[in-house]
Image (cartoon, rainbow, N blue to C red; front, side, top):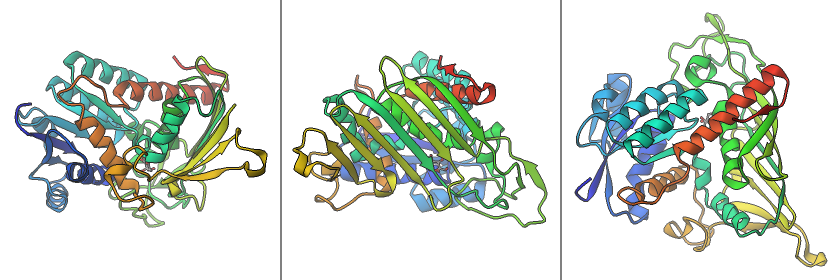
Length: 389
Ligand code: SOE
């Protein structure tokens, strides 16, 4: 990687394609990087859409042939932001070509695929990151440091929910996220993956699970175009219907390896009024914290050592210069938003290139999450506790 720039190839033009394009475009304007990312090639499925997206989002070139692009000599980093079933072939090819790789979550559709991807990046010795973007909220990164410093003591409970409502309408079409062959699972893999990773990130690896899942709407109209949620198109009532073969909701409990911590999780797309309600609560022997994505710049902190007359949850604004990532943005309490998480993500990743250190979450973290997803499905199907292997 000689020179002062890093050439990026991004595969995906829709929701994640946009967030990642924005991140690569912004990162060096706010963070110091030895090498500036160049938005070299954007890859998508259709010519017209990919060309339009590339022009709009500032990519130098566009292509509908991702395989050719990942093998281009001038590409340093490949970002896989395509639907889940394409992660595996794209990552394997990019690793073979010796490119550093960022891949969206969940890493793959099965643990087997994810393990294969981990092997491929290890074999080629490239850097890898799995896009669990919520780790990069300053409040979340601060909570992690508090836990590492022992400020919450021994953790009794990790309790997380990720609730959405975008498919409550039975006429919402059967887009790719609602098909097993494309998405692997439903709410479980899409948003349950985030809260599992959050648990791994903050309190430790889920070692065993008991679970149940539910598909509330079993058939949906077939869409003309199944590109995901970005367009939110509704098919007509008379449209032909197709089977939904993934979960709409998953509820599970777990134990954390090597600790006494109990974890509870809820992932659902059937919580009317909850558009993107991602929350967690952590209760420890010295105090507690809670966080909610919808108010992501702050977190609530209860310190058991506070004198009784002022005891209670306090609100901490994670926007002070001392908070992770915060100093690179605005003065205290001049808040940041969803898109900034991806800027932090690509900053952490790009700053490790050419150096020995590792940017988390890695593909190994992606695999660990995948193993829990597989165990949850098995636990729900067998109605038994399942060890995460
Ligand atoms: C859709 O459910 C979705 O966009 C997920 O795919 C993302 O990972 C999550 O961050 C928001 O919701």
